[in-house]
Image 1 (spheres, rainbow, N blue to C red):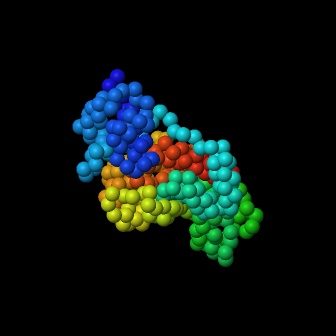
Image 2: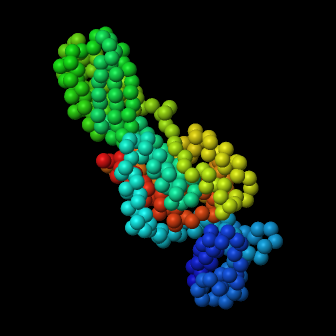
Length: 338
């Protein structure tokens, strides 16, 4: 029973500290929370939590604050998250459904998440490697050049130019386009290359090399990682008085500017199923040592193609942040699937 009560005390300390941003003492816990025990018992529980490294005493204050270990225990023991209100859900769905293209939808998702959490939102562009092919277009741009337009099932559009001996006539080009689209519809990179290359067997010696070249170009494009990027929104939220990082804000801002480093962190977190939470030094990034990062995946047809998340101080509203991240990811997935 004492172990369960100490977890309740820890939960109360985390919730009060997030709400008030002030160290929490035993008297406050007794007054605000119906823990059903005396102040002396609470003080003993707090001492045990401090010895275990879950809370700490800042400076000479009589109160205690959660440590990274304490936040981790709190997050791991969350039994649920507070749902967004019906108006919030409708606002998310409406706002994202009004996006005109992939760039607009991604930007809108970041702005929404930053507004809901009051923190920094990070949205990763859909990965080409994890995307499927929705449509392939072949456009002649001269006697020996083809513009290959690749549209993924996440709405991403890539254009590549292909040099050929002679561009086929319109009828042949239409046939090539039709067969390639039929062979590629919805397929991911792992199964795409063989399917597209096999299409060449149905053409004569004059046209088969062009089909093979297009197939290789598409597979090569979807295999690229060089253009992976992220969008940040709400960076100005970090300067709000309520954030109040223990040390300087500059290291956090500098870390956020390093998109390659952030992409690396997101790649690591993508290995986790569902919502992933990295607290403080769990990010293994010095500049984010005083922050927590909450992420989850989004995509179409149930497949994760990228991540989105929220970055704020370790003293964040974890249930509220998790709920917002989940909601925006869900509606972003819907927007991409339409």
